[in-house]
Image (cartoon, rainbow, N blue to C red; front, side, top):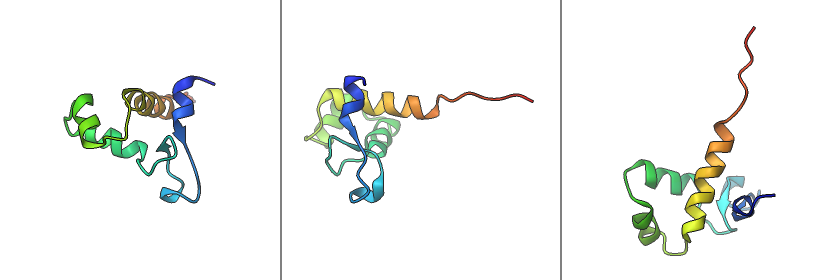
Length: 74
């Protein structure tokens, strides 16, 4: 398992089972939303001081993996 994937945790008892960063109540979607709003990674780290730069990379890689799926053509 890749090191970045170890940073993403899913706990049914926390945040409705949504993927979070390192068991904290910071959801992957929170990080992605901040980036999508135009914040730089440095600004995200300021906004969420418990994050580490590797957490942002992990969130992006996690999202990329979730949307990378095969498309079957008939």
